[in-house]
Structure formats: structure tokens, C-alpha cells
Length: 105
Figure (cartoon, rainbow, N blue to C red):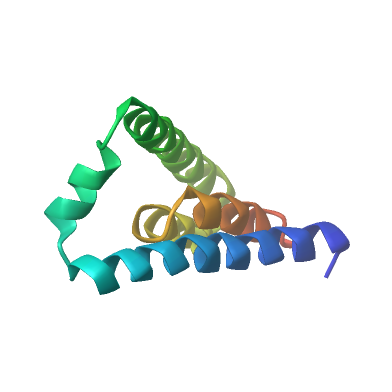
């Protein structure tokens, strides 16, 4: 495995673990209150802007994954879509790059 693919994989793991630490801490304090979490994302203009920035980037990544998967037939790359929306863009993007750079047989 190339150094670049290892870097993508390391970023995907880090991108899953780091945000989850904060989400789990929030859930420990507030319970599994998804409406409360969404409300927290709109706590002020800065967090609302960041939420929209990440949402738009996640949608762009989703379109890219779908378009390239149809052309390349690299079906495993579709895993990046649920990873993006269930974990975060910080996991989904490097995971997709990791899966995209694998040798296609």
C-alpha cells in the first residue's frame, strides 16, 4: 500500500474518532437528543455557517462519489456516502480518496 493511501486511511480513521469524541460527550451530557443536537448546530452565526459549509461540501462529495462510481464501477466507494452523513465529512472524504486510489482490477 502506498504512503498516500496510508495517509488517506489514517485521516479517515482520525476523521471518525476525533468528532465522535465530541458527539459522545454531548450525548453523555444531553442524552440521545437529536433535535437538541440540531439546535446546538444553530447556536450562533458561526456554528450555523459551519454547519451549512459542511452540509454543502458533503452533498458535493456525494455527487462526486455517485458520478465516479457509475463510471469506474468501484462499488465499494459508495461506503463513503453513509460514512459522510453518519460520521462526518472528515471521515467520508478521506475514506473515499482511500477507496478511489486502490488498484482497480
